[in-house]
Length: 179
Image 1 (spheres, one colour):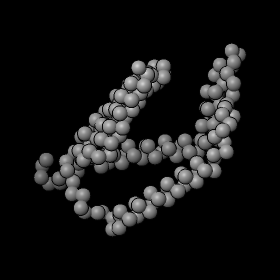
Image 2: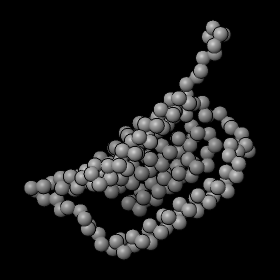
Image 3: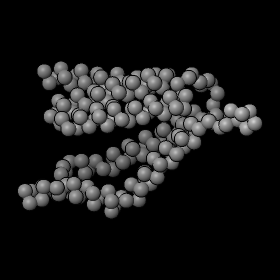
């Protein structure tokens, strides 16, 4: 039974992920993302992570995808666009070069950290009855002290993205037409 659930959930995830990439209509792509997120939630339930499954459905499939759909509808990008026009000349070769570069960086990071893959649990504090939240405190210390700059840059980028979306969605009033 576990294998059957895994195969069905994996098929949901793969079909949804392919739908996100291949659908030309952004609303249909967002619906495919919902399918992917529900498949991941089923996998969480299969591993007895019921809280994570609930969070997956409520936060990601519920709130985030609804936000995506709201932005899609607000910006009106659900109409078909002419993809033959490239806004930047030589955009496709440049994208291919950047993709190869990023892939090389990821492969180099995996190869260089391969020695550390065998040692499981290093750097993780042991939770005890006296200190049941040792891992949470360690995670908070790493995020808010060692990586605070990256955390703040991420928050600024998300803020800029929201402001940019609002600016792009605003319609300018016509002066002198009385509208």
